[in-house]
Length: 467
RNA sequence: GGCUAGGUGGCAGAAUGGUUAUGCAGCGGCCUGCAAAGCCGUCUAUGCCGGUUCGAUUCCGACCCUAGCCUCCA
Image 1: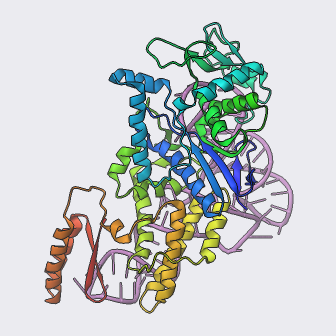
Image 2: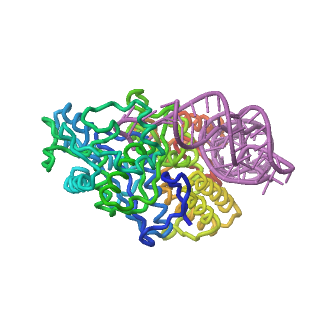
Image 3: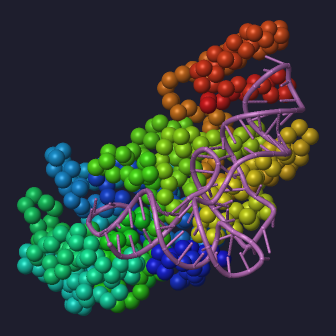
């Protein structure tokens, strides 16, 4: 039984797909106005992990993650650069795919772009007006009338009075209520616009997700996810829109991932404390390091980004790859579900407890190290290695050959080449056979200073890895 | 001010009404020419004050602190 924390109720509930055996899930993707930052990466990796795990448990998954390509930020950036907004969005959508591929995120079944769903948005807005939930304001914008939707605030636990008491909502003269939000913005010169019954204009951000999710998954589906900061107002507004237009149910379970902070503060442009995923990927040994780090803490809690944390993630992964090292894989990985596999599933079944699942992997590594030690059970070791790889794959890690992992370097260009290293090792082997220990140690130290660690194995074999 | 989440050992991070995850780091041992890796052992913890209980880190209440949302934001 898979249990998931539902933001709507604040409690864990059993996942019972509306259509038996088939989970339909949607997550709000990124706005492609720039390279996405590591905070975005957390959300993308988290929901990729969710979809991978549900598939691992034998469920069919239809995962839809949108691309927001109609947005103020895109329009402004494109204008500053003197580029067409479509071209600008396409450029960063392509970059996003490159980085996501590196991070091991599978492509969702559908990746709708907002600009291709204008008709669906207009239809939904029309329905909202017909149902009495929306109105055209004096400035031409079409607004959602939050008073009319009784459950408004249910997801975020906010009441309209409390929101107003906040007194931080700017008063817009065109709105009946400061909390009303825009569905359709009337056209401004030089901005993208589409014709509509309410005049030329473009969609508001919130209506995009309602229209795309309804079109691709139907109005009633299983899981809707996104970052915690989208809970209010974005997801609250999505509920108001979809339920207001269709009169039916929307997502059964709402999932929100916590923030990735820097120095215990949320990343933000104003504080200048954010990193793009692209620049982080360039600094680490392998993309799996970032992915492993992002999954090393429970998805709902906050976590802190720091180089030290990445180093710890690399160390953890090192241990797992070390266990897999030199264990022959014959005809693909052998997988025989054991207690560890059951423990892994039990941890993941409980609201995707990836830290505990990783602990199971570490336990498996220990078992594997024992089995493959001199005098151990080589056949058992192969089974364990296959299992470790299979479970790692569910989290999207341990996907490369151990040798590749150990030869990878955080700084791809600097340092010694593989051939250089082999040459020094040969020189050291000669010194060793002459029992010239000072020379042997000198070479080892020299390599260590270049970031290469040597390991003498039984039988006079020396292997190396980049630290 | 309103609402929400959280405060666990040197670091990160789970779990749990009583038997002290996991990884990194440290210490001791085995192994090694010496190392590295591995294995074995081992030291550090549950913000503060009350309450319930045979017993609370875990449940309840107050307090302190932190973060987030209330405005675009994963």
